[in-house]
Length: 481
Image (tube, rainbow, N blue to C red):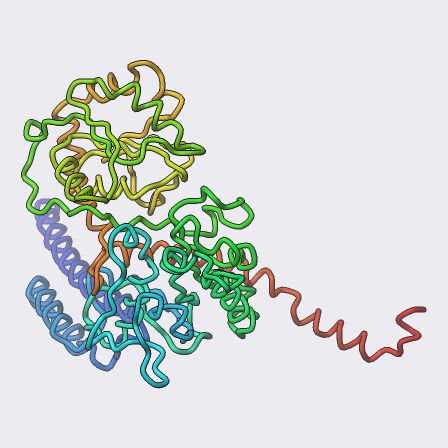
């Protein structure tokens, strides 16, 4: 009899055991989740007294209802920075209050009284138009930092300005170097130096006298020199800093390199393709290029490709500029083309790549030395074609390669372009994962390496000071004994 009843007894005990185990596991899961949440909360953004403690420790009768209730209370509580990216702390940036001659005065803003910065809540100074815009990166980043004190704290952003440099991850130098070069690099007689050169000299003097620079040797400073010809004089003296550049074409590797510096996209100058529903068959031009054909240095390849492609059917390859409606013409051409050429010019990069992205025209990159923005997290092969320069100039190589890409593959890349185009869009105020925030995120990824270098450099600071004290306390005759 006992043998016949034992299976029922065992089953009853097992079910009871499993029920208890499930209850305990559920409780400890919720309990551990609470402490994980508290440990990952951002101390300067979250008031822990506002967390819904009572909900988490209430009697758990229905796990699904409890979880929903907890989530609702979290979302409705007064937590300033909690979103899908809440595990990422914004980059803390200290920005120098530099004299206006270094920044907004260069775009025509006039300071009133002792004001260093414009009141951007009232009016935002405009940046010069035309091709000036393609290198306007310092303008957008500066605006983003200035706005961080009054923007919506519940928003998603990648950097916040701090006013104590000891709390900062990096130090931002608000020098509008590109517009300084574009507008003030010509010598005006009877001056012996251009205003651009004088500003660079003042910049070096200003930075190297700051305690923040002395403390780090400039390693944690951000200097923007996006125009290839900007900062030609100062860059050699400020080389320890992190540069934000368009490429490394005119820099020796000891001054700028991919390890310490950030490559930022150009701001596209042609119009974005809004509500683009054009498909493979709606874009009649196979391959498009319009721009300067005769260039120096690596840009010589442009004229070689011109002679190879100019007579090809459904290929547009011609000279063009922004003059006389050139931007409008290029916009129309790119919007109606399947592939757009991005060929090395005087430097490895150009804004043509970002014009193509904004047009959803699959970029064909022919530039062996080019460095691409965010390439540590973005796979360009998903939405562009890269061809070695030596292959591109072979007879029929390039055109055969392009014609071999069918409708399905092109459509996949076209869809990807529409997904990632926001990463290359400069705007104010900045939006989640736009170019401004992506640049700050790229800077943030460099911070651990910066801190490692700083900490290594400071290993022997204490002993060096002790050694100097010892030497100064010993009589001169003993130093020379």
